[in-house]
Length: 175
Length: 100
Image (cartoon, rainbow over all chains, first blue to last red):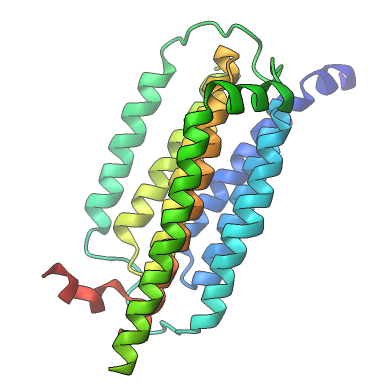
């Protein structure tokens, strides 16, 4: 029995991580304070990184932790602490709560039913990845080099736009 | 249910939960975080399909989504800071005048 369990250990871990990720995402809708929502989102992201690790795409898992948790969410938590705006009396949900939840159920049902129909047989078993960081890097900088260059242009544009937004804020304050 | 269906189901659930969060929550920062959740759902589906087809294109798209998410946060946070500085609240109802 233990050997059987060990044989299915990765599937069990995958299931546990999926449940953890979904629980964190559901908590994000319920919790009131932005800091707690941020911690729930970080939990979801860490569970997703574990799923990527279990699937064998370790470099995506590493970047999930480094970029999402390490950069984006730390930035978000920093801003929450910086603002320190307490929303004690404000309503938690907007007027669109009922249509939003109804739309969620319809969307989830439709897509899950469409996914339930048999998918094409995978060329390689899921979790037995056919490429590592080397294959990915070769494809990224060889075949998809133009997209790589476009992302650098996008990043420069974002830096310029962020500076412009800050300048607008300064001008509004000073006059 | 095989692994692909499980993972795509989780990805769809994450995306839908993020979408509901953007629609029903009133806090601007929470809405931003729900948008991040939607991007995470998309990433999971891309990785799953890349695994299923054994190609690198899904992983390349995941990296592009990482960049887009970073750019989105880098631009959205200064805008939120300016809005909060003007109105002293994170509640979306206070920004009604943005409707024009």
